[in-house]
Image (cartoon, rainbow, N blue to C red; front, side, top):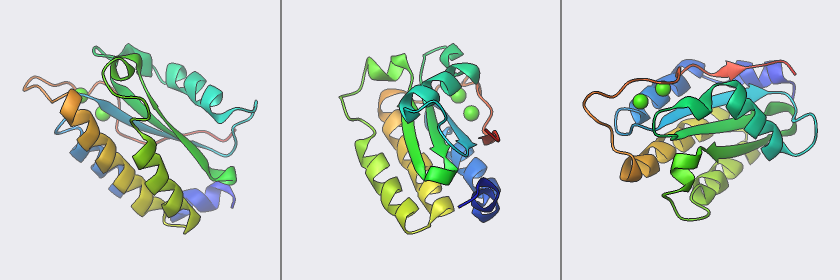
Length: 147
Ligand code: CA
Ligand code: CA
């Protein structure tokens, strides 16, 4: 599947709304990045680079979460910042990943991503509840690149 077809199949507005919704319960910041491939090999490594490039290591509590999607190879990785890793058990995102893999296999991209965002938000809220003076530290819009 070409990235442009993947993007055309996505209800981006619904996904952005899901991020805003999730962030109403947690100080954690959820971002989504989509690019065609994970050039350079290891998708986790590429995702980590992207995490930094998007300024996601700059949140106050180091509690940003990136859903990095390589659309044309239908792979993704969920990456949390160091503030999250310091608090949560190992394999914290595994159930979210497993559910999203199933959705991707059946072509339910929007549904899968919305569900993953909601679950990430719920899981984050247990460790990082939202304060009254919460700031939206990272944009909720989906970040897209062509390479
Ligand atoms: Ca926030
Ligand atoms: Ca945000």
